[in-house]
Length: 130
Image (cartoon, rainbow, N blue to C red; front, side):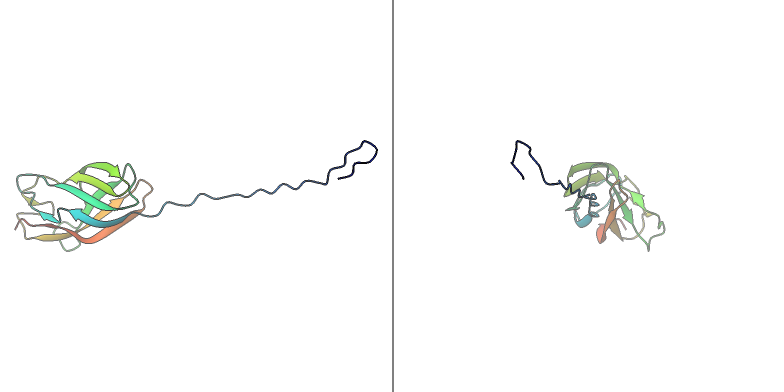
């Protein structure tokens, strides 16, 4: 800074820009189902799924690689309670959604956020109608 003769001289200014890229949200994790088992024969099962990283619009489905039906079966009416809790209702079936009146099926429970990130609890629920 020079203050002589009424003139003010400023040093050159440098502008620093920092670009901060948004961080991707972590994939959800599934840690527990309540209840851990049940029979949907003649009634549906109200299921609570606990974990982390859940967002509104998440879906819940069951995967059973050893069942007669190996495609994912969606849980109905998913309700976002919080980032750590979702609830849904299983299908009202004649046994399990994986086979009519079949044996007990241990299934994986998967939560998928709208961003397509998912988390799975292996052997997270057991259909006990057999």
